[in-house]
Length: 335
Ligand SMILES: C=CC1=C(C)c2cc3[nH]c(cc4nc(cc5[nH]c(cc1n2)c(C)c5CCC(=O)O)C(CCC(=O)O)=C4C)c(C)c3C=C
Ligand SMILES: [Fe+2]
Ligand SMILES: [Fe+2]
Image 1 (cartoon, rainbow, N blue to C red):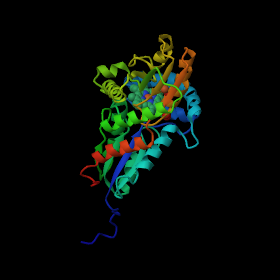
Image 2: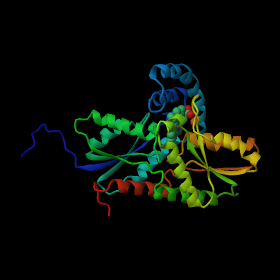
Image 3: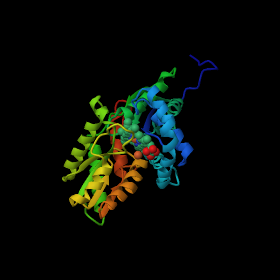
Image 4: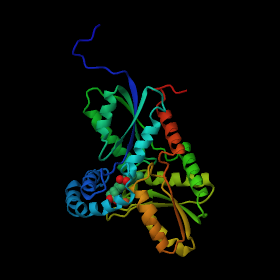
């Protein structure tokens, strides 16, 4: 049967992989940070307070003070190619594009800001992707990260007449490929130091403690990752939670508090790593590598090293490639 002359174009069938991360401002200035924070902190998966209570606080107190302070922090870590989180995620997508054969396109999107998840799903579909793997790059699951990224993708699907089939990448907090990549990366980082640390800290982004009681597995996923990293390294690691936000009680122990008390306990040399972040970002480069170092030294610490995230390192990309190949099984043959 012939196609009617006005039939919509049909591109060749492809598979898409969409890497998703949190998102970041477009520029390190207060108006851009304000726009970003307004979207991020209005997400009910992130701040779980009734809208009528939270929006006045957000619009009144938070968005009038925090953007300026955060913009200053972003300026400390901004790169020539933009925000570290955006630059690294872009590099990860580039490194993985082509790694799954000619029929698979790898792209990336951000939950907040740009490139928007909805736009990239539509672009993949327009390019012929009838099957899409959504890959939120959070090793440990939480409602505030993994779930909201998937929600946003599903909201786009809800508006599409011809939806692609989708799969989602499960959290990989205990995946041997992830633990092995962390082990290699940490060992390489330690070997390059001119000192041997008395303690290794694994710092994970915090969450309100209430989320644990409400059934979010994030806390347990972080603990399992830390325990497996400890076993893989064959030495003790100390788990901490960073980036406290707001007045509620957050998961403990807090990274900044631990860094400040360690020197008094005779631990004056530390190395700190952030296994919960797939890409270095404000929270690692400014909060840990800059402010963490200052706090530790001010408290009497003598040696401090921040070990980078897996980013687009060879081991990091190989790990992501392994996870993704597994999830694409049955969609593409890659033997
Ligand atoms: C890796 C997992 C993350 C969890 C869990 C998470 C929870 C969470 N975060 C906030 C508030 C803020 N986070 C901010 C930055 C930020 N958070 C993550 C990751 C997780 N957040 C990343 C990767 C980043 C960095 C973004 C970048 O541009 O580099 C910020 C903005 C920066 C600032 O003003 O400090 C806020 C605010 C809450 C409330 C929360 C849990 C409910
Ligand atoms: Fe955060
Ligand atoms: Fe922070």
